[in-house]
Image (cartoon, rainbow, N blue to C red; front, side, top):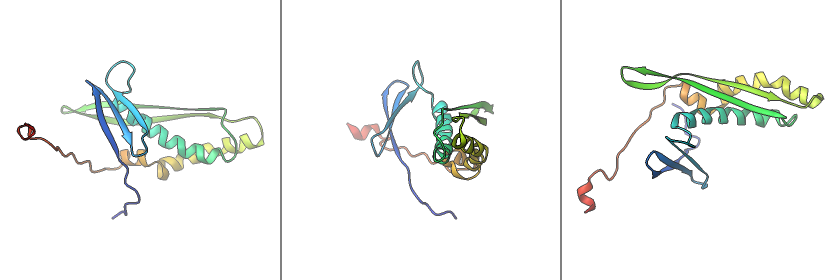
Length: 148
């Protein structure tokens, strides 16, 4: 059995119909939902995968050279399995450029290996999506009569 190293948590609050904000312990926030100007929950998941892996790549390559371009595109295919939806595949595309000097070339030469290490070992979000992960749902304050 794996040992728990850290427990992450957020609190999600409804701001309006189909509009939510997630806040972490440090107070950082991200708004999402359904509607104009909002990322959907699936898009937030894609952003989390891309962001997690981007951090892995950036931490290593930035030691050699600062990227002049760093864009990661993420997309996923939603499928319906007997009325239940999920993503069947997620793809990330890294478009990273460095200055045309010796340090930039060293950083560029690392990208493929660092991206692979992120996928195989370091990106907690991608590894969670790829591996079976237990997700528990609990309902509290269910009894509306007790609030009266």
